[in-house]
Image 1 (tube, rainbow, N blue to C red):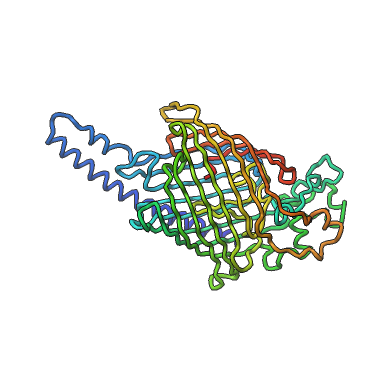
Image 2 (tube, rainbow, N blue to C red; image 1 turned 90 degrees about the vertical axis):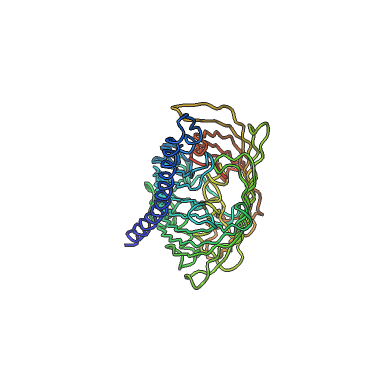
Length: 467
């Protein structure tokens, strides 16, 4: 019944986004018709055939890109599906500028992760604000779970290696999760379109299965030790580390308040400009069972050199709890004013580290990346350019999530928990970016972890740059 409810809610929000976009489509088509009629009248009046300006006015209003998803992600396995970008450039903008952007992603993976997302960004639905509407349904049968607080959660690689005497089963560090996220954000213009006040509301519905999704033991693993047949997540429940009311997930409704400053010259492959966020997400008690707040501050900058053939990109983000108790299933979230992601670890923030390797009340991350544009070319009448990159990603636990391990048996406490001080988690690696029609990207990154406790590296092939 819960899955039927999720599907119904998802379809309702998709329909709402389609209606919002359709309203703009009809509006632009009407304007397009007026331009065409004006051009026809002008043709009668001007027999000299000089219609360069009218040709420009009758140019394409929309552009789109369809990126088939047949890729590999070290965290998720083989990915297949498609990503669709639809851009409304209005009557006077050329790529990469646009008035509206509809992003739709529908992918599945051999690792059991289904993603269905729709994100609408619009500067024309409301004259005084930039609008963002999101519908996301993500079902992950093998979502990584390593515990909390980075270095304090010990990763035992041998538990998942079949050639090891300590092997338990491949899904020991996983659980199953379904996430439905519905979001409406308004970025109100303060002093022009660069400086905006952010207000928004979002609904998060999370379902957790501590047993399913690949957590069943393989072979005779269940007989190796009293708890060997259970995943780490199931053991956390048995040891009383996780609150009883949160085992199966829950519903979290949040409000967003803050400021955004954005001077980027491009939203796909930026070569110049700043993008700075400072906002709070607040789950008030009157909107649900949970009451907490978190402060997010993110600084991004792109600096171009040598006629923008080389670009230095920087991002630093601090995300800290202000008050209350954050449900454990909301902790592995990297909040962003455009689109939040799972983290820390994996394709979107710490490339080369295992997904969700760092989970805490507060953390800081930094990303440094240099891109060098190698070549520009046309293929199938489409404009392409390609860049190579080198990146350095860092993360640090600044605010640990408080847990009680007093009921954990000593033999397991030494295996899974450590009191060592926090250190910076670091990954490095190369990347390749292929951009076509200036608004669509294919990205390939390979990250190397500097510490085996964070993993041995990962390959990520996707359809958007990191920031």
